[in-house]
Image (cartoon, rainbow, N blue to C red; front, side):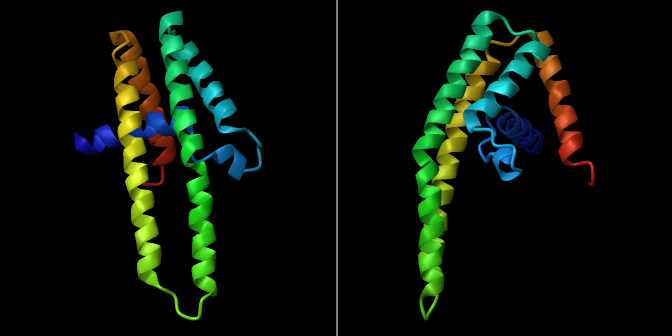
Length: 148
């Protein structure tokens, strides 16, 4: 059950908020906001969200994208610090480990934030919408784990 919960929230997060910018990594040039907007529009259509539900989802998107923007510069700093450490005569693994632990702590904080926002959105869904969302998650699971 715990694994299913993690997969479900993970799929929601990946599908809706696309924090790692797959489109940018694959040269599609979409910003996080634009990609999130596209997914929200698709979800609104497939789940037949009411205007109140869609507004709630839009508000959540703005909160999460804003929080992501706050933290975006820290990842660049991590890579710069790693490059500086590599250039040294002696690599200090504890320096890197400390940076990675700090990054993990921030990631965990973001996961808590997203889980709380997902809970808010979930509270607005009807039983039928939950069934549709579960079906969508099953499709995503099959798509991402088809090789297993």
